[in-house]
Length: 338
Ligand code: PEP
Ligand code: MN
Image (cartoon, rainbow, N blue to C red; front, side, top):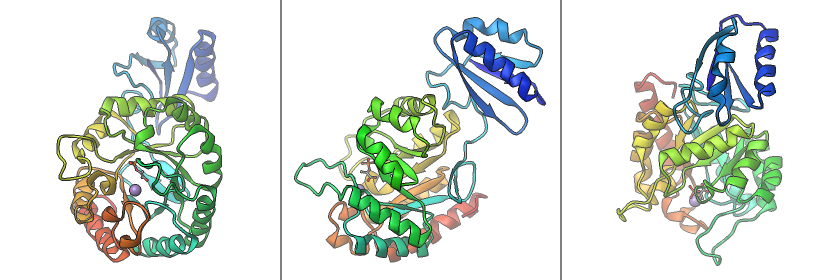
């Protein structure tokens, strides 16, 4: 349930409510809005204690949360969450946040070059995989920690924060040491131990939608992260499996608008993995921003034909520059800073 406190409730008042929640054996989750403080009380049968809180004079209302996901729902928090990564803000109708870079970190030279190129074109965050989730065990698996070091160096040079994937629980601490955002890949969306581990961490998390997951399952996975203590979660729609085989996956743009209604969390779109086709990255990026996406994740490679992974869907820095201009004008046309 959600307990909304009256405007102007003092810290002492808030503490009183928190103590009562803990005394009853529940975990409180506090969200301080511009005017009101709201407290989520999660736990089976929490709603049975409703009357205890309704009787408190500092309490404005006590409402059950009807959805299976609680902390990620708009019922818990009506205002958009803005995730801050360095000086980049993601969500809440802020400037669109574009994450760009190669599918995989292949070498120091490759990464430093493309990092500079995407920065100059207007990317706000650098992407690049060091631990790659590959379908085949014979495909390039990523440079591991060496790749993380290059990402950290590229971040220092360009001042772009870095997002990269942790493929399992053991890698989380290592990845968090070098990266600013820890990515949980589509294939791991329901790796509940990994979700709890990144949830216990301090770094913002980019959670990608599983390719065979419903929006509800996607939000339940985000709930794992928030309920473990980490509220800085960015959701990423990256295409789902359908009968269509003309594209790598099917980009589900309606999910973006739907999630915006159901959740306060920022949502971005990855048209690169969704389409698997570089000719579709531009149109799908424009459509994503028009649908209300808070940003994009785009694979960019200086020489896509030589890429060690996902070359077909990688665009050249020049095309990325053009794409940035286009998505910015779409954002501005919709009253959003481009
Ligand atoms: C990626 O972004 O590097 C990636 C592998 O994407 P996904 O998990 O969406 O397939
Ligand atoms: Mn890729």
